[in-house]
Length: 396
Image (cartoon, rainbow, N blue to C red; front, side):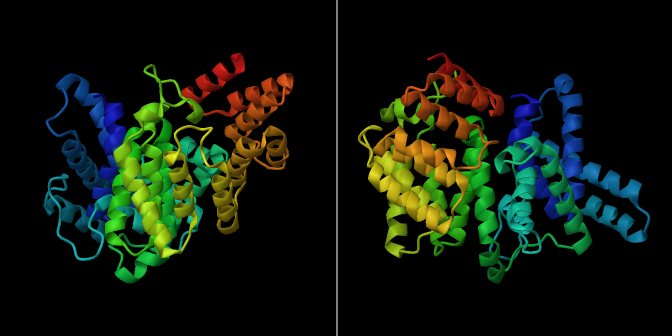
């Protein structure tokens, strides 16, 4: 395992542990980045330490002390450095006992970043940066905005936390519901980012989803999100070829789907249905449950899928939801009915919009227009696997 892989896997945990120790998000992030720079310098020559995560956290803690000493202009900053030096080790094997309902460092940091003083989108973006270790470009892609726009949002969020004195602390029980929507959005976006090419992020999102379900078992949207992630993740074994190429849902070998995840996800969906408090994550989970129960694409209950998308549009209308609904309409009623629905959407920056449109045009026999749409999708696709799939579709 190289330093880059360890960075991807351990960055979020290291930041979360260090924030708890130093009480300053900016200082924690900078110190963890310093530690990884040191790892790049030393590990190729010295070899991997027995516990890379512990080494990184200890090194980051020492870098935080160094920064505090260099930046000390007041006695209290110097005292803070002294306190850090005398504090117990913050390696992952040492967990400090702390009162409150949230004891997992990463989940605790998510709740901290999802403070009501920050706008919902800012909460999500900041937590993706800190917990997922995602680049600004990756976060911008998730939000369908330009990279510079997202960079400005992240800077403003950190400045607001600093200027408003928003503390890093364990939320009280009364604080949890008000922060839940932001927390769920963060966990789902972490999962989505890992969906195609970062299985470590998907696994982390599911782990956090399970913790949330234990923490808030009476919140149906929490159960809905966990179900949605499990049902989607169940298809991972069939989603790629042996060489890593993407396989479309219609072409996947459904015998390879993870039946244990499907069973757990479907059980959670049924539990949500009994509560009869539908929300966006529960409805999306129900859509995925319909897919997971179908022997093939042709045998999918597309009428039920469309009905669920209609319900989703009623509670959380977005252009992406409308695009997915149009795909279901094409399967039930044909591409001629679906194409006007797609053309009415303002999703020019979204590569899947052009890919869906290209597929509909091809099915209608409008080959030159389909080729142009595939080329637009290819120009906007962000990762290699998606670009390779689009090139294969172009060559058909």
